[in-house]
Length: 112
Ligand code: SF4
Image 1 (spheres, rainbow, N blue to C red):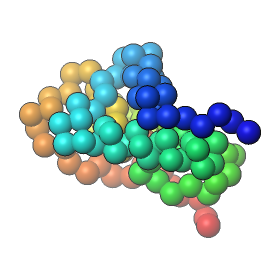
Image 2: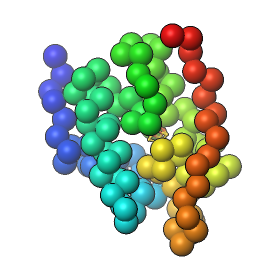
Image 3: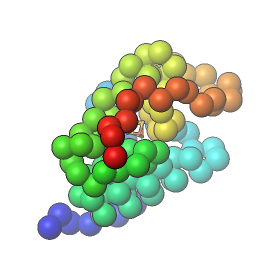
């Protein structure tokens, strides 16, 4: 049984990921960062891994492997759109004065 994660643990985790990958975190001006961190925490404490907070989980690590945060799609999405699908991670040069728009889902979801 994995130890439960707190909000502080998950904030520290996403900060470490952003630093390691050279990305910026969502600036949280509208509470999006807090909401995504809370979603990651809830998933971790339910399924045992950081399932993407914007995507449904199969609650099976092998099936969800591509959407364990940071997901396989974050890097190409940040390259193409300047941000990941959930808007957690951004390109370091992202201009936050431009409103954050939806971006297309790159993942082909497995069959339920
Ligand atoms: S879209 Fe963003 S928040 Fe979701 S798993 Fe990928 S990197 Fe994490």
